[in-house]
Length: 356
Ligand code: SF4
Ligand code: SF4
Picture 1 (tube, protein in one colour):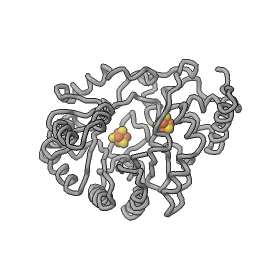
Picture 2: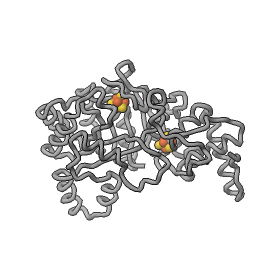
Picture 3: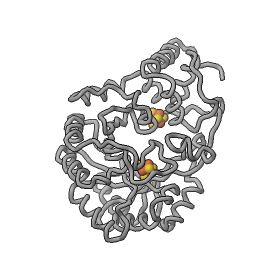
Picture 4: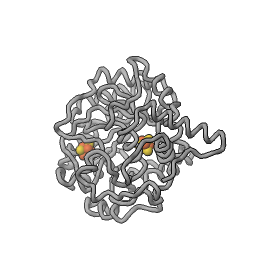
């Protein structure tokens, strides 16, 4: 476990068709700075958490609170990252001013969400403004992209949609580098070599964190035909290493084991009594359902639920969608009971999975 996420607000200035968490101008509810600081204080007592991500919704709808929160996180000794749609980067000058301001507050990294669906609301020029300003100010430029494709395909390489997208945003000439590959390489370097590689990244590379469009949130309604769906029988088992290990706290203080689609099911939040966030995170991580998802993947858990009599839609769009489908039909206790079936059967050397 190295990252915790604070969803400062679920409100957003725009309402992208692919938004997996239904954010938009109509959503209400902010975290409020005092509560956010209290969460940070509790996360600061957890040495295994190195990074705190501020996300949403669009957190930069509250620039003053976000600035104060960044300062607080740094005072508590954690690294801090921000995810934003970049609406504030409307001109090169405004992009640079804002990034300078956030850097001075202590921000370590800022990622820009970039998809074709953002273009319904935001001009493509903000991407260029952001990248140029990030290089000047000293951030490694990072874009997070959602592209169309088959989630069940092995990630052999970046899909064509991603290249087209970067070209369209005027970033096709950048030295695009997969964020996961970059992180692994960075971790393998000695400290002095890391600093040099980071400087080279800031100067010359564009870090890209991409994922396939999945049928979650608004995408399930608006982009059903663009999502690749497949039956469970044709879905490979795929483990999810972040289940329970990316604790996510929303604007109302609810605790989730990762981001979407869990946040779309607030009734499935894990208990996080006031002042006991650290303990709640450890208890959540140990829950059987999340252990099964980490070890074998959501498909194994879903098959155990089917064996217990649950039924699900015929098709799915990948592992996160499998989680969404399970959360729609089973509460946390039932998920754990199904997971215990899996764990017992594993110990006994037999299968509990339903035939499909
Ligand atoms: S995808 Fe991001 S920018 Fe678009 S509505 Fe959702 S939170 Fe806002
Ligand atoms: S597979 Fe499930 S647990 Fe893993 S990130 Fe997706 S929704 Fe979260």
